Length: 225
Image (cartoon, rainbow, N blue to C red; front, side, top):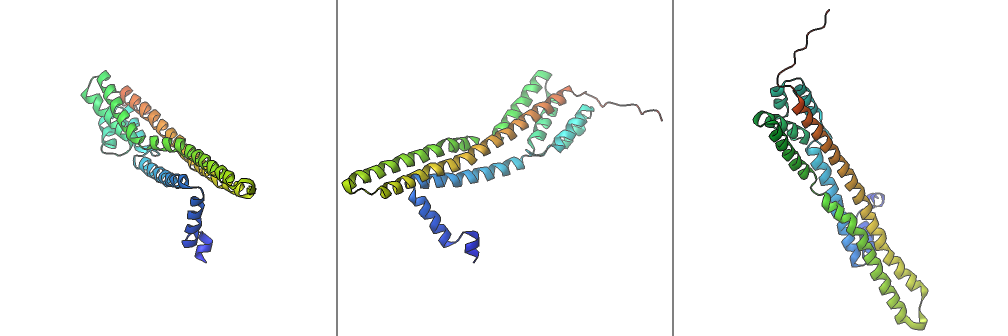
């Protein structure tokens, strides 16, 4: 009963294996790419979450403190944090104390580029899968069509059109499978790139605000009661 509801189990796995085998050897390569794609997407989401791609509260509060001239307090907020924005803010605060303005900006830019490069790991692999999967599908279709027409030629005058149609149907499976893998891979790639672009913009904005911050706390007079 459970197997019929979920579709998994020995029978379900057997049907999946038969479906993949119908597309020939290329189909197994595409199936492997689908597993790699899923693993890459899950790993990338976990990795970006780990470095705070969708969390910027601490870095924002540190920037507010820096803009108020409380530079030491701002540095304590972000020191030792994993978030990419926090690490860049911390690098900007420390560079500002240890270097001149131009050198501090260059050091902060260097740290930001290194952090973004780490955040972009895995994207080239997704891009490669999105490019290669449809080509593998097309290759499988071409090979299947060649095999189908060779079988038709070998059968001579007694050729059965149903045999040719069945061969073409099996050959087209690889094209569909390749596109099924490539489309989610491309969508995930675009999404991850947009997340990293947003990170880049936030880092640039935060670093600029740190360098524009006053060197001493701003004391605002109390409003008259």
